[in-house]
Image 1 (cartoon, rainbow, N blue to C red):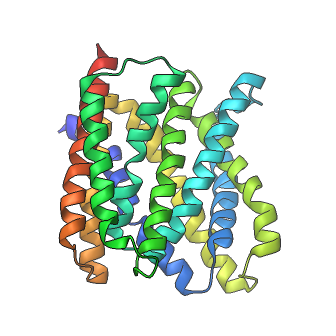
Image 2: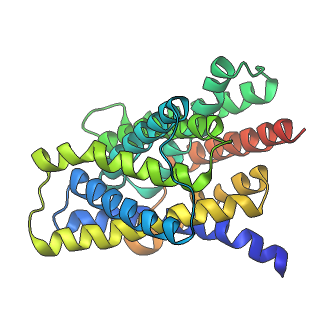
Length: 290
């Protein structure tokens, strides 16, 4: 039973991420655009995390120059990921979005070959081939610009590059305090979105701002806490495999709440991408553990 509770925060994180799409669609339905959602969510999230971590007497001193650069890269990656995910979840299906988004694990792994001088193994080559073919299969019905979900699919794929950047930044920040990383990354994201909210934000009514602050802020805080405490309790490879459950859970949410079917092309492409992702997680995790 104690072992199960160790995995509970990571399982909860996968479940929370599976409902990110419905949250974005809800906020859009009440008139909030992408800049409203991200600025309001990150700004209140930064305030709440500051209060929580201060109450825990966590050390949140200003990061040193090198650490600050890594945090900046992480925040830029997170901001771009959230930007593109908004359009992906609101313009495409949940299945297409989550499958294309998860190819970020591939981009992060390939970039690590250059940045961290990791070896090119046959497993990475096979995983890359599976993911790239899967992407092609999903996009095959969308070669025409008139395709219904084409723009959303492009946004989902674009979000995967930011996700890959987050993975790389997380690896470079592995020696930093996780609470400090969470607070400053959320704070920097809020600062990035501040001018965009001022000039391009669409929601000026109190009710809309309240919903954006409450839902987005709560989501940011809960996510950060699950990441901090979940990753401490289990191994990296175990956490990574569990978090891949976000893929079927997100697809299930789309089916149950929005009656989204799964076209044959998406199904085949999704199987290939999921196999590639699992191969990357298992083999990369095993090599790092060794």
